[in-house]
Image (cartoon, rainbow, N blue to C red):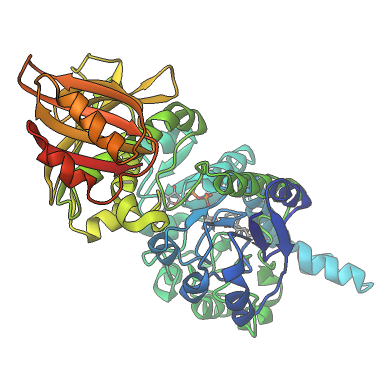
Length: 526
Ligand SMILES: NC(=O)C1=CN([C@@H]2O[C@H](COP(=O)(O)OP(=O)(O)OC[C@H]3O[C@@H](n4cnc5c(N)ncnc54)[C@H](O)[C@@H]3O)[C@@H](O)[C@H]2O)C=CC1
Ligand SMILES: O=C(O)CCC(=O)C(=O)O
């Protein structure tokens, strides 16, 4: 049974799903050294934001197939290192959207109405109303930085509260912003005009310290800033100075440069600053959503199925995946077959989506073909995550084409490879929705299902040759399960495809090539 390590608190609903297919060990607050020691025993790791999955952890993770982040941000995972090791990283892109958006709105209102400090004072038996007079958000300008899933929801609700929305997001169209009732502006204008600024962007090298002393200096002295996105987007030292000096009016912060928040001057700023301990996703509903979403993906990957929200392999909508699944199998089989026919050192591979298949998303099909192509060399080290990188590192040139005009079958896949045994090509189709059929080898039409052990010959189409190969295989005690011949013209060149029950014994291939009329022979194990 596979083993899953859950190293952050995860809702029971997720643990129950994992337990259907795996042994589940929940061990939270592990020091790095302990995680490094334990991880070689596990097939999957499920985390929230607490666990840092560093390159050191990934190096030690000799069995790990998947890291599941029950949340959105994967900045606590070294995704590049995981990709290199062929480990799938999945997240839950939408499970906590509403929770995070509502937290940002709650922070904005708490800050405006001094709710945390007022609460503290009443609980300390005071009744001080004047001290906690606040400001309204109605008719104020909200600057939304990042108009993705969370930013959009914040903008929609804020508009309903009577706010006017400016937005900055270089990857969102004006039309989409207009649909949400936002005006797209550049960042400087947003900084200058906004009464409230709320951040909903990932932390990247471009967004690190986006809010620094220079940016804060452009804001209104009455401006208030909310960060429920990621620590490090705001320079905390600069923020402290800006609030202390009255450059801006205040800030509400959920995420920090270093978590848990250690010593911090932000704590000294009284009611001008509201601080929460990374609570954006902490609602009962969001925790069930993300736990179920990610646990289902871990379960699927452990069962050999693709994940729907992998961040390091092309994401596919489940309905698209369902439609493509047989073609991924076809691509992998043809890649593996052509890779063996072409011998080692493949320099170039051409992948053509033909007929109706030409209308499909080619990326996963190309990846599946490369995975098949490299399987012989890399075995279980190659998978959907690292196949493209491995192919690139081996200097394999990948040519991807489409030909909707090929109408022999409703949809077919053509793969050719140039390797140490020359150039070889195969074509295949899916029959009856699930069955792989090889319909062409090196331009010779055939119709055979792939089997574990196969023998291919290229020979002259002449009487007696099939019998000779049959007798030769018989003399080596090789049992033939099925045989088919394909030719272009009578008594011209032909191919023979044999499915055999066992691997071909050493030396027999050489004997086959000595049979008069045989030009070449290849054996493959799929
Ligand atoms: N505090 C918490 O507990 C939670 C925090 N988050 C964080 O919230 C952030 C946003 O999450 P989602 O809305 O789900 O992500 P999303 O991917 O839907 O949206 C992010 C938006 O940022 C935009 N963007 C990227 N780089 C940008 C840049 N340099 N300047 C301006 N815009 C840029 C993108 O175009 C995209 O529209 C993420 O950092 C995520 O980790 C998410 C959930 C909970
Ligand atoms: O797991 C959590 O509570 C943090 C959520 C978060 O920051 C995210 O989903 O990006």
